[in-house]
Length: 553
Image (cartoon, one colour):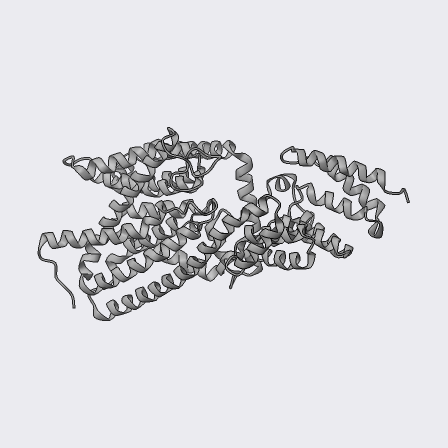
């Protein structure tokens, strides 16, 4: 049954309820669980899946009753919901800058509702072209409330966005703004090019030079960070080539990346700069490579086809603001990690739906039935994931309370608490490392290695390799310990700690190797660390003492 909307107020009511559904779906951006450790987003994912259930079920009702209204109002409603959230986030950031609201990260003043200024800036950059489009549409006509709302949102974002210091967000906002302005002034641009071709060519050359200078300045502003991302993409490309079709799973991306980096450095064919900028990242700072590593190149191509197709449809329909938002998100995803956050995932789903829904033949019964089935399948998926995340949130809360034992050195109590929630926390790399390290401190090397080898499936942290090697050394499996320490050296050759552990291993009476010991001690003493610390000074002092204690022959 399809209900025709003839009364204007009924139409407004339908739009209002639709706006509430969209706002609920996007509300993960402002939801936070203060009882969980910073960076743990299981609470937000649980909230998103719960909202996803309500959104999909609401959309089922709307598709059955008001298919024309969805096509007519969905994009407009989405634009203004995004502007409202952008307004809220910008005000939140300004309050943090002036000290009226606390930041979610101790190292940064400006984070908005996020825990890092990078994703926060990316979210604002995604909303900026929506505000810009709504302003450009209205600037020549009578000034109404929507005009002032779009201007206010745009100006507030411009006040906050530079302070976020996110180069990826700046580029995303600039590219999407150029697109929106280009579409709005396309007739004037075409007219100018036709009648002033030489001036247009000169202007294009100047713009090209200025863009090159700007990109060079952005690169030099954080050169080491930019080099680090380029190196990450290089290793990530190697990771994709290892398993291009099926992938390794979303949670296993850090582990696959770490193994690829280890293999790369093990060849010895690398530069000093690569050694300096290498790390053990949780993400590869490129969501296209991240998806290819996790699920394979075919899934990546399918996702790109959906996003590109939606943007093309939206462009043809004249929905330039939402197309600009989708373009901004796609540009930002090239050098950051937005898909790690529920706020961006929900925004991506809504943007794709808003751009593409107008061409869907929802008036036809067979297509409405098909789309309803897809939404019901999505609703079941949200319900299943909601249950899984509920268990994970409960386990994370228990872990948060139990960490005081680990952090205070009460490892026996920590292990007892950790054992109760291990099943729900097996995908959490930090938890698994703490559990395995606590077992190591209790001198239970076999059980510790069992836990740490599980952690290696979801983490690329070389400290896991170091602790496994120390466990092997404790069990007097010296050859195996050497292999694990060498793996840690190859995974991050810039770290001094694994060289120090190897020096201690070669000083063992049962595994004494004078030449290797001297080489490791020399490396510990001469290798330049990224950051000088007390721990490095202590390692160097103990390394010198090793040579004095061991016999000459």
